[in-house]
Image (tube, rainbow, N blue to C red):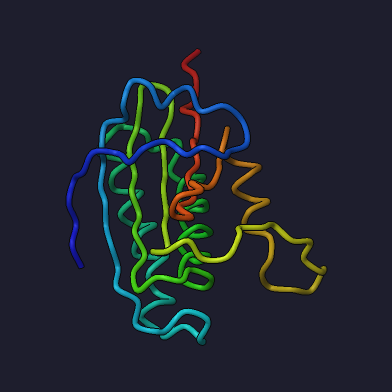
Length: 163
């Protein structure tokens, strides 16, 4: 497992909402890349199933370091959904997670290595365990989208405004 600070990648072309907070460039928090232990499309191994929880913990620690504890629950939920999707539906041999911030937003990016299938939300049945992740991301994030070049999913969580 490698953790390093990196500059953010180029903003995405296709998105919902407007992501003007990308300027000025976000302050990097962390980047982490996990090698997959199961092939794309196969049942996930215990190690791959544990990855969302590990990244949630890193996200919480980073937000605490920045003094943004109030955003931790929403960020953890979004991180869990995007990392889980990347392991379940990504086509690459690794999953990359990047977290950064501006004065007004926290940006989370998750890529499954390779373009993979078109990202689509679907209508989950009342008894289905999955199928609601992108609805949660849409409800919690001010904006989100998919980079058409590599299938990386990003979202921007607005920082609470001070009264």
